Length: 208
Image 1: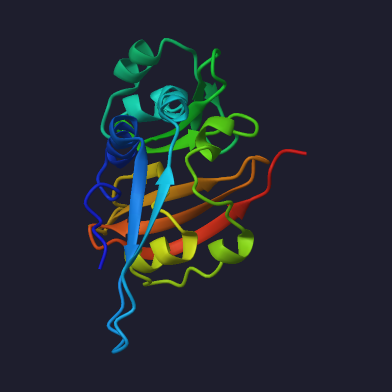
Image 2: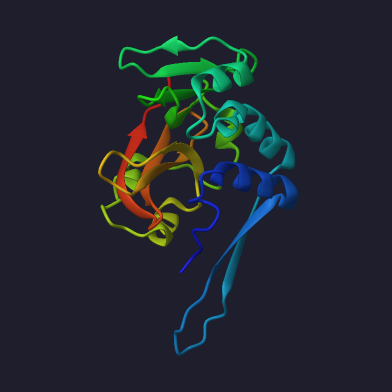
């Protein structure tokens, strides 16, 4: 079974992208207990360090925000005005990269949930996917599916694109892992923490 350790931590995205910057590649191994003793197969996917650095820079607003951070602290840190959405959430965008973060504040005016706001076709994030992802892959996610099966279906670990505190009456957080395509479409799989089991998924079409 594959490890959940970096993907299911609040700073999972930072750790994953940081690891890519240091290593430049990811490796996936598949073994078999077949009596014919077929050799273990190793597939290595090379990630361009420049692309990994660009992805980390593009996600800087998302990575900088922490749950329970006060609105005043957040706005001072980001240095840009927020745009209140129809549902009451607040969007903050980096004027240089176009990427941003969507914030849901709690009753205490502190960060309750955050979500990455992509920019257009998100070429930086798409560069980190070993293979394109489809809506069929996204909707193969069944409630209760463990993370290692998500990895098998999606072909890689994904990037943390959302994180929230537990809702009232619950002890489980929810995080979203995203897979991006060059055409701007992307898939998100939502997992509960700390178990790391699927609670839902979606596929978002690219910009027209």
